[in-house]
Structures are given as structure tokens and as C-alpha cells.
Image (cartoon, rainbow, N blue to C red):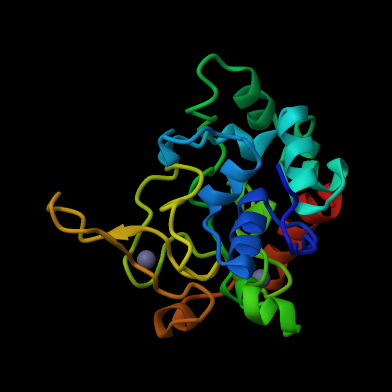
Length: 236
Ligand SMILES: [Zn+2]
Ligand SMILES: [Zn+2]
């Protein structure tokens, strides 16, 4: 395996999925391509069968391979997973120890379809985030996190364009073979009812506030304080 010609610094708090989407966007490569380059899955394997457990904790050989590929340290790669919270959030440990854990993580984790904050995805205005999107945060995979305290808003549960996801336990990455989508675009498939027609991605932007989103009630100061004290301060 050869290291990639260029890489990308991970953002604070971002998830493994987020990093793969942003790095892939920078290099014009699909997430599937990156995972194959790191020898995580073999050619011919079904890309929809990325185990959700990759987000929870990576085995050492996979950490080392991805670190070499992307020019990061093993510690930086491990920090993209939820492993650091396994002692604080029992569903992580339960998912890692349950039989069949590879395909079905605990119901108290959002794996393939986390909620999100459009303003976080819009980025912090720096050049790199404007080009390759802001972070998809690890915290968004935990159902107990319901608001973004920085942008003082409830997290969005679904794409405002296609209304998906309807199932919180989808594959880790939708349309993993697609290298054309921006990290802040919806990757859910639309119009796939007829098998012979080529399906395509919704591709709606998730980093723009829609009118309906703007009109929704926003969390009060007390609710934001609750979220911040209970989760973000203790877990940072
Ligand atoms: Zn935010
Ligand atoms: Zn959509």
C-alpha cells in the first residue's frame, strides 16, 4: 500500500465517516476507494456491508493501515471512532461485545444516519472547510445528543429535500462508491423503485438552513445548558 499523495488534517470531534468523506472529496476518490486502499475490505465485497462497528472501534491492523495511508498517527485515527467513550456510554460497549455486532450495533446508537447541525456542516469559514465541508461530529451518533450548543439549534433528523433517513440503522456510508458528492450533500438514494433505471443520490445540501428549519422552535437557554453540562463538558 502506498500513502496517498495528499492528505487532510482531521477536525476536532469529527467522525471516521466524516474524515473519509472530506478526504475523498479532496482527492476525488470515493469512500469505498479509500477503504480498499487501506485493505479494509477486499475487491468484490458489497460496499453496503461496511460494518457499523468500524465507527465504534477499529482493530489495530486497520488503524495502522489507515494511518499509513493518510499520514496520520495511530492515535489520530483511533480518535475518529467512538472508542474513547466506551466506558461512559454503555451502548458502545454493548455493540462491541454482542454476537453479530458487525452488522447490527446497539439500537441506542445512530450509526449510518446521524442527526446533524447544518451550521457545523457549513464550516467555520476557513478555506479548507469551505471547500471540503465542516465536520460530521462523532457526538451526533449518540441519541442523547439532540442540540448543537455552539449554533444553539436542535439537530436535524432528516434531509429537508428527500426526507430520509427513515431507518436509523442504515449502512455506515450510503453510496460508498460515489466520488462526486460533496461531504455536505445527502447521499441517500432516490427513485430506486425500478431496478432497471439507474438510481441516483438525492444530493440535496444539508449545510443550508431551509425556511422550514428556520421557522422551527429553537432550544431555550436552559435546554442548551442541560445539553452542554450533561454531555459536552463531561465528554470533551
Ligand atoms: Zn452546529
Ligand atoms: Zn436527501
